[in-house]
Length: 328
Ligand code: LMR
Image (tube, rainbow, N blue to C red; front, top):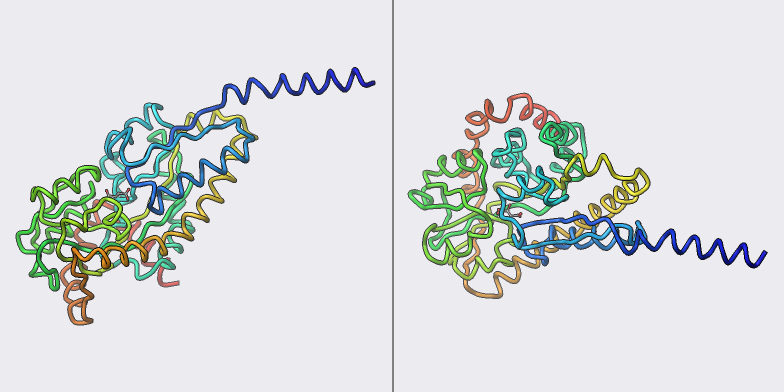
């Protein structure tokens, strides 16, 4: 009996060894610092995925565009060179999935609650489904936060943007937004933004406090306005073929890791941004400005027409379904 048990133990050990010695690797590439909502979310997913699969999966996280910049990372995912990414929702246009640019419409969301209604509801699911013909599966939405505008001159009213070169993400809606302010939009990879600001290739930018702070962009921007005119969040995506071909038990464990990492990432995002804003203030390079209600309504008047202007690109029905969702 003892012998049988011993044999069973040996067999079990031998069986599990090859899996541990040769784990399945998930390469998770992203462009921001590890010390951001997305960076921390990715690290949490790694921790939980490895724990829930008992080490059968190893997640290699590559932050700060170490492996790929914005555009290349989506190509790498489609080719299977990496398995997982979390690009900003503003970066799916060049892939041909323009509906995601709805998230960039100025002043469409008043709060994170608004956002959750969209991302956790039917619209969020429908958008993710649009990625599938591109060989991509959407797993989750992760929050970053609302954007602030920055430059080396004060940005109080729309007139203050006249002629400023502003770095944007690769979204036509963001291009239209900057044009509505009579600024000159410049699409640029995230990894190149700091240097472009530092050398004066661009005058200003828009981003969340956590992205500005962790890339040190605030050190080269004298003014920032808490405009909350738009939002940055992410779609966590995987190569669909890779995901579909996973062992079903493993996939379930990874789905659980993703669900828990998503809860974590979305819980920390506001605090991360609040702390980054406090750190930007404390660093003393940047004067932080809050819009008066009158100034805010000038911004809204200048930017709201972008909704109509971009309707045919995004799909009027997508915009309408968001308006509907937010009314309820
Ligand atoms: C940007 O390019 O500004 C952001 O999308 C970066 C990010 O991933 O948050």
